[in-house]
Image (tube, rainbow, N blue to C red; front, side, top):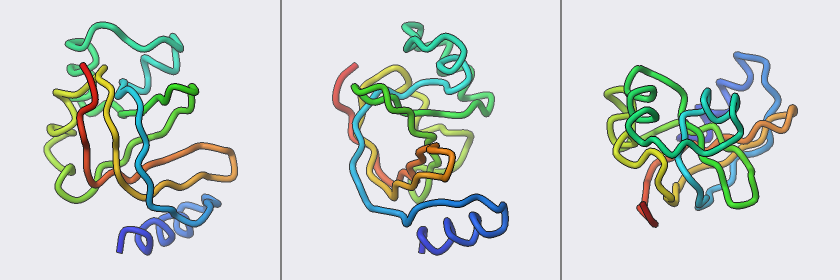
Length: 118
């Protein structure tokens, strides 16, 4: 179902994406805006949490430096990223459908989260 919704969204918004692939991706959850400005993983979890609570975009940065836009789905979704907020600046594994757009933007439509380290 998530894959169908993703492809419909791609068509509606005119975004070319590769086929979605189910995957586990491990990295650090960050406030995307701060990370893209500074290119440094924020050490202040409280600041990242506040930004995300206010509706800021969440990203996952892997050990290789790959940045995935995080779109929360299923039981993780709702209430302004409430289930992700406590894990900001922590290493986690997200499970979900991964897609890459024509401009090489990577997205994970996360349906599950597993804490790895603080």
